[in-house]
Image 1 (cartoon, each protein chain N blue to C red):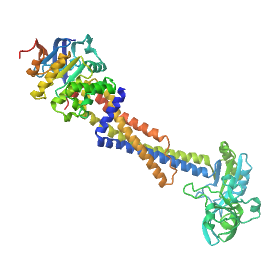
Image 2 (tube, rainbow over the protein chains, first blue to last red; image 1 turned 45 degrees about the vertical axis):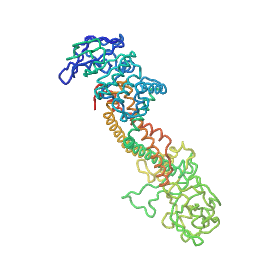
Image 3 (cartoon, rainbow over the protein chains, first blue to last red; image 1 turned 120 degrees about the vertical axis):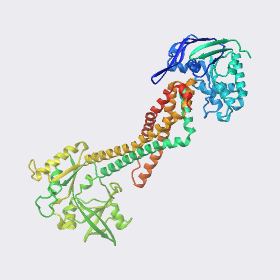
Image 4 (cartoon, rainbow over the protein chains, first blue to last red; image 1 turned 180 degrees about the horizontal axis):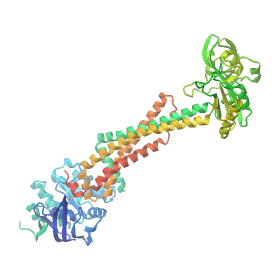
Length: 228
Length: 408
């Protein structure tokens, strides 16, 4: 599903050029559960931004189902994110003014889904993450784990091909982290492709494949479930 | 359908901060209210002045003596009055003249049946009614025979009648003008109280000769005239008749080419046009000053929108991450600015119209909120919202989603 070849990303900071990705090659198939690991500054977040269509590579190619995402215009990237990608962030990124239900509806609003259908699907997704009873609550009225589940429901709203999660348990205690990770496990079991960026070995251990980054390069690609 | 959702987002953001939104709109409220009030007052004043001037009679040319200049050798009693009966008579023989009315004026104390009233008495000819578009309500106007016989008869305005006799019929009653007894033979129809605060019904008309000899006496030469009203038969003809009158009087007064006129002519159409132009200029000036406050209101909107974009950077990043295009963000913020501005415009229009009607009541102005002030106010406030919302919206749309999501 995903093919990247010699992917490079260079940031210009003042006079200096900072390389974030120095030529990464990676292929991810449909239904995989991949953890991208590595220390801060290794390029793993940059990879996620490019995979999610939030950023463009400076060099190399990124193909998604055969399409050259690297050559997309701004509007094409927006459509790509809307249709193909679901994002889950460390800090949840829920809009505080909106209820849980409205937050889940948001991607469908931009997707042009009619109101009634949108609400029905948002309710269904909240049920699925176990928050059916909290649909009317504001984010501030929810615990961290509940907020992250709302965010996951939102990421699933437009039936994405790929769920991208950046340190999804970074702001949660270990018990809630396990709940979130088991939810990810269920979603993957149901066929969803998952890429999780993390530096937490416990989180990485849940994935079926671990891709390790260092200094903008892939240093290991470990298939198969990690030893418990 | 998506467009409508963006309107909903914009409303949501405005409603989330009611106090801030209200204060932001206030600038536009004041600006629009000021513009609406100023234009309404201008239009009201213009209508009032037009009414006053047309009330003096249409198709009218007014001939008056020229202003006396210092240094000119005195020509004796009544020397300021260069116009004479003969001038009026000659004008009457011109083509295109419907009526000529020479006038002399005096102020006189009138007393009758124990009541007193001081009013302006005008010595006129019977044609005066035609020239000034006046009508007789009861009794009759004096005629040339009355004038020839030197009869002391009066035609009075309704105000004079009311002051002297209340509601009783004034016809046939005797009244002393100064010390001279006159007989009331007619009453004018009311012209109403319009015209620069003057009561046009507070007037008394008597034959020219009688006023000259019995009321003004030695203060005026026996054939002198203060004003000649000339009514043109057709409005299109006004300018030509005015030129003919000027040429004729120059001839009558033996004024040689190159010498200045000792009289002046004005026509009502040009007076009306000049005064309307003056009022229009004044209105535009007032509205322009008021529009400055509208601009200040717009700057207030821009300021708050810039604050909102900064505050909601993460929201913008998130919206982009879930698939909003830059255009969607742009429209959402532009709509927010327009809704703020337009809401201010609606409220300002209401307040401005109420204010204009209130001022009209106080000043006994014809209350005229021009119908175009509605679309004008709403159009202007929309444009203000668009102009001053453009930069903040552009800033929002241009944000880098990664940076925006990272912002605390």
